[in-house]
Length: 90
Picture 1 (cartoon, one colour):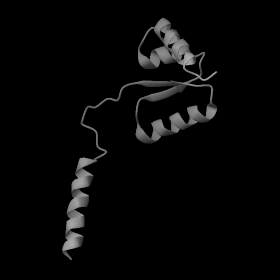
Picture 2 (cartoon, rainbow, N blue to C red):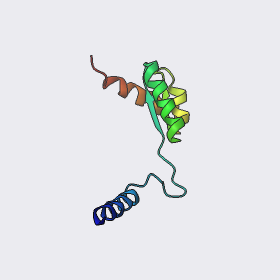
Picture 3 (cartoon, rainbow, N blue to C red):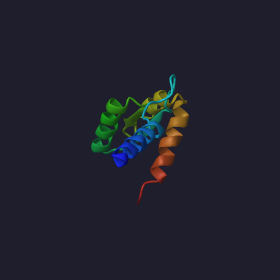
């Protein structure tokens, strides 16, 4: 019986430590995933619906969309997309 009580106590403690509740007023940072993969874009969209976070996916030519989402200039977004392309395997 004491084992069960100890397990309940441990479980409650763990639930408190690993709470999925975000602090009131928390706003996640904007993340732009730039990919040609329709599957990845669909996955990002689905996760955004489920988690209500601030992730969006874009096709590489959509620098304007990236700029709006990240609240940067179009030139900065184009530079980010160009940099991201250098990270792709060749």
